[in-house]
Length: 320
Image (spheres, rainbow, N blue to C red):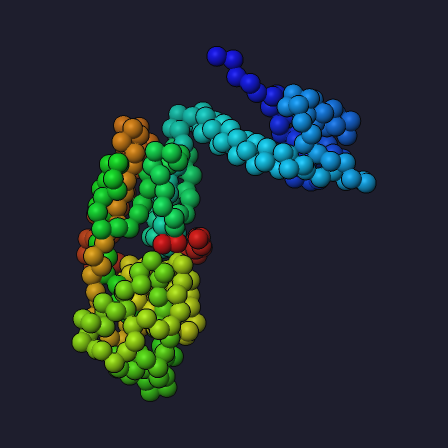
């Protein structure tokens, strides 16, 4: 079946002209003449049978139809570019692996280890994205995803990676004798920092600590653990954070866990991939590598192992 499609050059020129609101600037970007850009836009308008731009004084403005068309054209061009980059990745023989991960898990755990995967599989190109919102394994171009939940993801093949312990932490400046906190009952005197997706964390921990005097819902809510950690370091308040995310800060004293009493989360971290992609060599390689890394991280340190070191660079992204 023959598709009803305009030429790709006319679409890329239309997108550039719309982005710059100028044929001249689009021509400069694309290394074309202004007249060539104008002719391509006119050709596209003739193909569609409608006007995409209004000419107002010395500038061009998208019509209503042009605005709607631009949104879909940009989406299509991004898909084509992504598909082309993935195809080019096969020049090395390994292909492209699209990985979705929770942001703070990605920056605090995965990023410091992913180099070892590249050493083991140098021909596999990686595309890592941070995700905080629900994703669709069928509709989206995701090969593997790391998420946090109570049960495996429906419609995919899942591996449980690790459980999680959370613990209340704060900056040393908040602790007595110079700070306001000397016991659990003093938590009402400081801000409690909450993760938006875990609204019951403080309530559950205070119940385990047999304290009913503190309002577990007062304080400040954040979208990501990375923001919570940085706010806690600054002395803003006390937070409940997964221990594995703050090993460096606990080791160097930037953060302290004054009460101990870690609490096991009811959820776990999972690796999931769409069933239709589970046979791909890159997916199988990443799955095995990640399971090996998780197993290694759970082994007790041997004599001579050093305390965790703060990485030279930290990947910050949007979370979890």
